[in-house]
Structure formats: C-alpha cells, structure tokens
Length: 320
Image 1: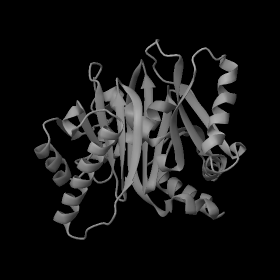
Image 2: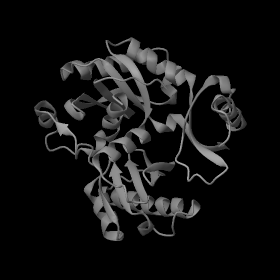
Image 3: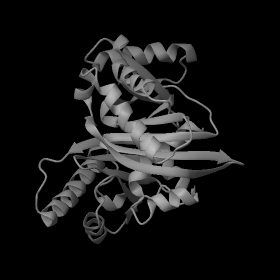
Image 4: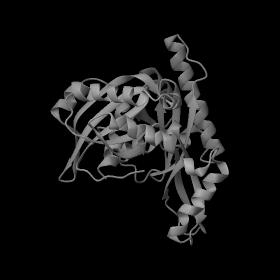
C-alpha cells in the first residue's frame, strides 16, 4: 500500500462506526500530537457499505464534520483499515529466491487460497526476521480487495483531505506499542483489541508480528455484570487456545505481558484478568511517551486513552 514521508499527518481510524482522528507532527526527531477527536459515523464501515454507491460521500461528510468542528489543520491522511477487511498470512519463500521473483511467487501462493481471481486483490508483503539458518524466509503477506481501496479513495476524494498511506489496524497498534513501551528483552506479548462486537488477538514474538485472530461475541449480555464476566471468560479461553494451537505455551502466564486496547476495555474486564493471572496485564497507553500539546490534552481530558492506539499508530506510519 502507498507510503508517504511527511513531517505532519492525520492518523485516521474507522472501526465499525467509531471514528478517531489524531493530528501528529514530527520535529527534531520528536513526534507529538497537536490535536485529537473522536466521533461516530452514521453507518457501519463494513462490507455491506461497499455495495452502496452513496456511502463514500456519507462517510466523507462524517469525517469532514469531525475535522471541521475540531479545527484540525493538516491535510495529509494515514488511514488504518479494519483488519477484518484484509487477509494476513505468513508465507515461506526460498531464501535464495531472486528479489524480482518474490512477488510472482507470492501471487501464486495467494491464488491457491483466494476465493476470487488474484487480479482483484492488492498483495503487499514484507520479510520477517529470520534466524539465518532456515532455507526459507517467512514473508508477512497482506491481501486486500482492490474495491476496498477504491472505496477508501472515493471517500477522501469527497473531502479536502489527501489520502497518502493505508495501514492495517493491528499493525498500527503494534507500532504505537513499540514506540511507547520498551520490551526489547521480552519474548512474547499479547495485544488484545476489545471491541463492541468482537475481540482481536495479536501475538508479538521478539518484537515482531507472529499471529492474529479475530473472535466475535456469541451474544451480548444485557446485564452489565454478566457481560463483563462473559467477556473476561471469552478472552481467557481464546487466549489459552491460541497459545496451545501455536505451541507458544500451555497457559496464559506463558506470555510475558498482555496489553488491552479498544473501545470496550472496562475496569471489570481488566481487573478480572489481573486477578486471574500472574502476569502483567494493563491498558495500552498510546501517549505514554508521546507529547500531547495543550489542545490535545484538553480534548482527551479524563477519557481513556487506549482507544486511540490505532489512530496514533496510523499517524506514526504516515511519517516514517
């Protein structure tokens, strides 16, 4: 996906109907946030929206409304795409393969599992860290339908903003975590996005992406206490299953640290997990080491900061 180099950028995330914008600037090798805001769109940003030709304009109006009411100034945008709209895989390629032959090889691999012709997708990839002894090199491959990217482009064509970078939410969150926390000597980290309708699990191994999985809520309990308890149990069950399935450990404590972020990291969920497991579990803070300017500090106030993980990470991607 497109990469831009900018000293100032808007990081935009839109997950379901939750819209967040952060305005970031880099100066003298320091990154700081000058402004931020959150709002909701009138429609869910999902696959159904892509079938309606009127939706790009409606999403554009919602973004413009939030942008103008909060007096943002910057125009370049790094947008973080919901990972449920992409396919992420680790694929091995021969480590001796010529660079110009990697893309054709990965396109062939994608053809084997894609449900549509490969020409309908954009295939992006990057090499993962290798131990140097294997005959194969793992590639982190991201596959997204072209019509999704065209839909995004159409949204921003209906604004005064300029879409320069497209990221993916889990990579945005990883990037924000890496900037704000020093875990150079930590082997395995669990990063859990607790949303209103689903939970997304990511595992970082030796600071690098290892895997990610998405789990939907089977049902949303109306009772607050029951809902918190069922969410905590679901996180516990799925996290342990992921560790066992991928031979990362037998229990949750085999992770070195766990960070929670997203819309629905309520106190009861955090405390329930902290009381259950003997491992460091905390809310991820995207502003832990990032300077917030006066207007941004005023807007965040006493609100939780972890829902901004994705938009902050997108902004970081935009000024790399």
